[in-house]
Amino acid sequence: MSCISIHQPAFLPWLGYFDKIKRSDIFVFLDSVQYEKNSFINRNKIKTPNGPIWLTVPVKKHGLEQKIQNVKVDSNQNWKKKHLNSVYMNYKKAQRFEECYTKLESLYKEEYESLGDLCYFHLLFWLKEIGIDTKIVRSKELNIDSRKSDLILNICEYFNANKYISGINGLNYLKKEDFNKASISIEFQNYSHPTYPQLWGDFLPKMSILDFWMNSEQYHLI
Image 1 (cartoon, one colour):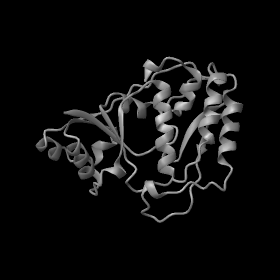
Image 2: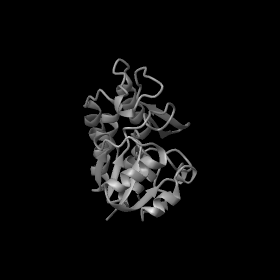
Image 3: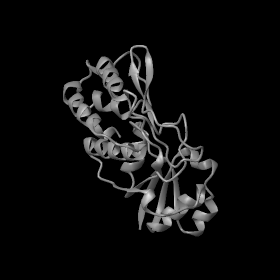
Image 4: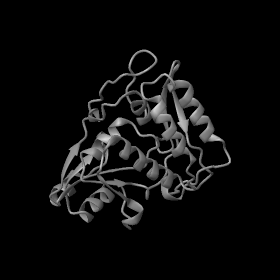
């Protein structure tokens, strides 16, 4: 029996994403579902003196129902250099900048054709950096074709889970009665965002992992 959390890929995820992973025995990286434009799958925020800005991974044109695993990164755009320049300009005074920026440069040297692969291997990097050793499984390897609540339930059943940690949005679509019948409890995440040393004025929550990583060594806060 095990506790599972499931989430779509996210680029430079926020701390709440890692909280779900840390509290799970297995985290399912949901790359077999439809890509959502203007979501956090290919972008996230960093803090600047003028407020938050987006770091976005550009993707090639794709069909309306393209699965995340099939979306391609647009490598013709010079997004990596732009990201690194933005991080350098806005975090060069951060507590851990010298240690972290070199690692970030090495991470950005890696080439990935698909957005799913990029987010997956970046996630493994972040998990190692902050000391989380939860087992990670890609949903595209499970061959489960159901949708929405049924998809979540079927994944939990696949791993013989007895508990599922859901984001708060699960309240809108999860069929609780089906989980009850399968003897799987649902815990809705109620993440209390910590504060930590941060540049540029008043604290802003829900920045990307990069902001926390550059500014704080207190990884137990996740």
